[in-house]
Every structure is written in C-alpha cells, then in structure tokens.
Length: 556
Image 1 (cartoon, rainbow, N blue to C red):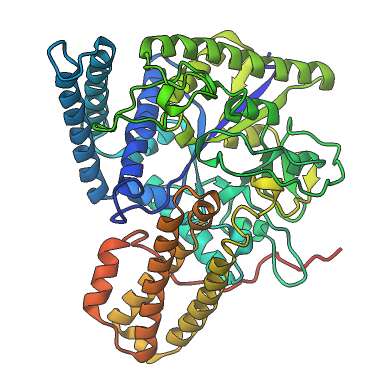
Image 2 (image 1 turned 90 degrees about the horizontal axis):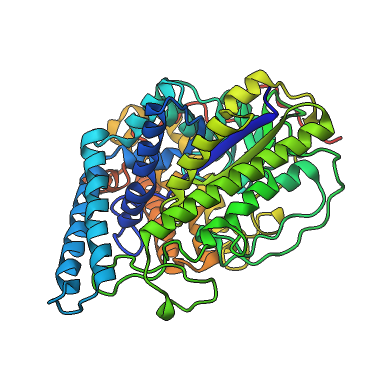
C-alpha cells in the first residue's frame, strides 16, 4: 500500500538569448544548459526507461525556451559550442602533460574527462536525439514517461501587467506554442515566479486567464497554502543568491498544509503547494546538497580554457583557494545524498500517513537548470532518487496531472497576491531600481491595444506588410514583458545587459508602432527584426480582449 505520492516538478526557463550576445550573457547560456542539463536529463529518462522505470517527472518548458531549443540557428550554435569546448580541453591536455607547460596529473585527468564529456553531449544531441530536444521530450510525454506543462509566453510577471490584451497574448501564446511543439493541450501551468493575483473590483484575477485556456492545475508556495510567515530566501543556490530577505506581514494561518491539493474558489482549477522542508534540503546554501564541498565549483573557471577544474571545497573558501575537482569522489557523494533525500521524503510521507490516517502529497519544484548547470552532478542525483524511490519505498512517484486525476481536491482556497520572491511579494521585480521599466511596459501595453483596435477596423488590415508589422510588434511586446529583465537588474547579475535588452526590444516595438501609425512600414526594417526576434511564428492577435466568461467581480 502506498503511504503517499511524490510529485517531482522541474521548471525549465531561459530568456530569449537568440542572436543577443554570446558570452557571458547570451546564446552561450543556452548552450551551457543544453550540454549540462537538458541533454543529460533526456539521457537519464532514457536510461531509466531501459531499466523499466518511468521517470514520471512533471517538466515545465516555457514557450520562449521551447522556441529556442527548436531553432536551427541555436542547434548549429550548440554543435559549434561543443567543438570549442573539446578543442579547449585538448589544448589543456597538452599544457598539463608531463612535458607540457604546466604539468599536473590531476588537471591532465580532468582535461581528458571534459573532452569525453563534451563529445558525449554532442553525440547524444546529434545522434541519439536527432538534434531535437523538444521532439525527444514530446516522445517521452507521448509514451507516458513524463508530463510537460506550459507557462506564459515569455515568463512575464503576470500580476503586474495591466491590459487584458497583454495578459491574453501571454497566456494564449503559451497555449498555442505548447500545442505546436507537443501536439496536445497542456493540463498544467507554471505561473512565472509563482506570481498570483486575486480578482479585485476592476479586473479578474490570474485564475481567470488560466481558466480561459483550459488549465487544470498549477503550483504555488508553501506559505500561500499554510498562511503564517514567508520563508527566508536569502541563502539559496542557483541564480538567486543575491536576493535579500524582506519579511512580509504575517497572514492568518489557514489550517491547511501542502500534503493535499486544493481548488481555487472561483474556478475548477487545482493548486498544489511546494513542500518547504524537502525543497529547502536542495535549495539551501547552508544545508542543501549542492553545497557539499566535493561537488564542482560553478564560478571558478580556468583563465585560458574556461573549463571548471575546481570543487566547492567549502562555502567559506575563496575562489583562489579552491581545491581541484574529483569526479569520482563527487559520484560517491551523489549516492549518499540521494539515499538521504529518499529517506527524507519517505519519513515526511510516513509521518503524515500516521497522523492523518491516509496517504498524502509531497511536491517539490525546482528550476531545471539547477540540476547539471548550477549543480553539475544534479541530473545524476535526480536519476538516482527516481530509481531508489521506485525500488525501495512505498512511495508512489506520480506526474502532477495523474495525481489530480486520482485525488480530486476536497477543499478550496482563496490565494493571496504572492510569489516565490522575497517576502512572498513582487519586490524582486518591482522596486526602486526597476519601477521605470514597469512604467514603460504599461505604456507599451496601452499603445499596443490602441494600435490593434485601430488596424482591426481599418482597410489597411488587408495589407500583408501591416499584418506582419503588427505581429512583430506583438513579439517585441512579449519580449519586453519578460520577468528576466527586472530580475537581472535587481540581483545585479547582468544589470546592464538586462537594461540593454529591455530597451532594445522596446525600441523595436515603438519603431513598429510608429511605422504603422504613419502607414509606412519599411520591409527592410521589418525583415531585420523578424530575422532576430523570430519566436512565436504562429502568433495570433485574435480574441485578445476580455471575453464573456464565467468571470464576475467578487468583492466580498
């Protein structure tokens, strides 16, 4: 008898990097994640399948990421990236040989390790998966091995958008892009930044837009379900390390926990909360597995080849004092950490079963890129956790949609305005450093709405050039609205790059609207924009205003 269900959610997202720089910010960020995360994850799912084990992961792929992974320019770029990495490792091998410039047997071993590693990544991409990561994921979903969820088109912070035109464009483009790549309608949705807004006197809540595209479930944070105080997010792994914790006002406790799924009060949509302790065990910089000193150091790279030859050593060790990485020792730590994690999950569900007298739900959700990219050994950790859960426990590893099908929510919740960010609010994306961005986003939303209304009622709508300009303006608006730009400004990781990208997309958007207003669309300008920002080729501008639905303002 199962003592409970474990839902393992991975959320995959990168901003639109195509033809927008290479390194340290740009296309190479996508190639790194392809080599270190997405391809190893495909291989892991396939290896589990060969063992007779269904991975049963719930894997979110944002539309803007799916578009990039399916793009021929990006595919060619990845093959070249692997060639460069292998060449760099070969040059290092000569440098580290006994008669080389800097003889070192440990570094020699690592240089050869990387030659093999990148050769395997390239061979898997071109041979095993036919240069088609998205197609391979579709195949796994069609076989029932994983479930793939969608998201807003460009990972916008939806609660902060003001116009129905924009919100519908983000949600409907997310739906149509999923259908294009995966050949079916998505059941689940990842709200970007887990950001939610309830209805108010003036406009519907985010649940309205999920309901309009037929979504059955989404995810939220633990404190949203339980009430009380938000968790501290200051010391975490991955790209969030520089976010300071700002406490939010304490909410009344709801009396509920994350061991069950709930429904929204206004819509037939299920919501599941992250399990705090099981998530903390991976994310925490002080206590999470990726902080083990034997794992590879992300930040220190060889000053010639750019390869990572060092291990974390300890959280207090300066970069200049890091010890050399040993892949074999790291592999042993993965075995121990995966054992511990399976034990933790088992204990949590056993304890709940004893207290509640029935099986419960334990859901964890992480950025996919944490595994492999930020935590180099992370994909192997996932594979071992799945294998051990399958063989040694009474825990049922299930996809999120399957869990909802088998366990209809018994209780309804009213979700507050919330996100995963500091204090559970939206301050990470809207603050003194970024408020100027939101002023421009809101003006662009309003301008686009007016432009769309004008050209829908104009004879010029029969002009193909006008139609193309409208559709490209919509793409640029979606890219302006990406939550990545204010996030990168706030964290300081790539502040100027994010500002430049935001301003560039906004400039293109405004140029297109000016040309439409003047009735003089330059085909040369339009083609240059289309060749660079080519995502969402099938974008639709129909039905973007609020439709008659089950929405009614609720003020009680």
